[in-house]
Length: 371
Ligand SMILES: [Zn+2]
Ligand SMILES: [Zn+2]
Image 1 (cartoon, protein in one colour):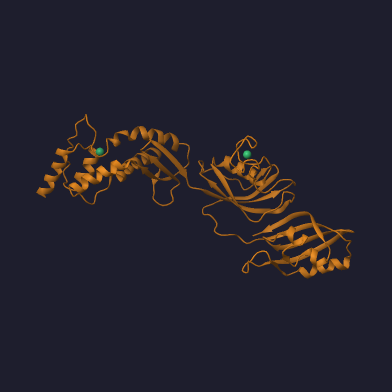
Image 2 (cartoon, rainbow, N blue to C red):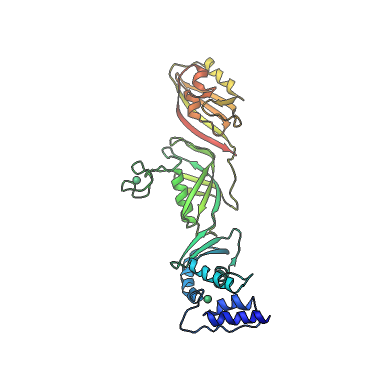
């Protein structure tokens, strides 16, 4: 005990330490009594260069930023110059001090204590609402918010709207004058509508959409709509209420709800499609009867080696519309490329081969998507 007290006073005789560093290094390891730091007011703490005195001004910036976020829990990470930690380690090894918190931990605790008090939130390690990366090298703070997941369905009421956003053809997404530095083609898309809506709603940085199947620019999506999952990246307003449905003019959203976890893997689904098909040669009712053989058949894609991913046709209905036109209604597994299935392809069976008549998919609409 005597030698420990001797060491403690020796540290304080040789090194200028601030109150925080003194408490951390000496009080906890050597003595129950609080040794007074002998720091002269003129020179800075040997270890931390009085970093604890700068916390309030740094916190002022943090509060200003954090104020724009909805959160109940947070965690923080620090970036500190190596020299701080090196001096901390130097003293600890020189005086054989073990089992005490390091400087980084100490600063982090001090910041967390103040943030908790000011914002009435809690610091947690696992999965906090926001994460603060505080950089002492340039006094900056970056805040990242945990993503929110949203499930919904969309209906496409008019044609000529593509499902996905397209990269600008001139700059390939980098940003140029042609695309007004957005990196995107200025086209009407379902993705664009949904992204804009969710971005605004949650004051988010970016929206990433996971589609349950897809359709052409010219296809309608009817019935209950096509399901999708959206990942809201870095949302500032986490607590915003999400109504069950929302009319985005050309796109209608329904069944909207926030999810607490991200759905894993791909989701199997089935589609009810309605296809208008044009043929090269004229058709007869008896040849069209062949279409009924498609019921309950498996579709094999020769282009892809997907043995474990078989797709089926469950139901078939057709109607002759004219000499070279007919309507085909199918109930099929999601993921079958319908146009290829009609127009001759690597798929077998396919409509053109079955009817021995070259077919063209003229119109394709999704009547329902079932998950
Ligand atoms: Zn210090
Ligand atoms: Zn561009």
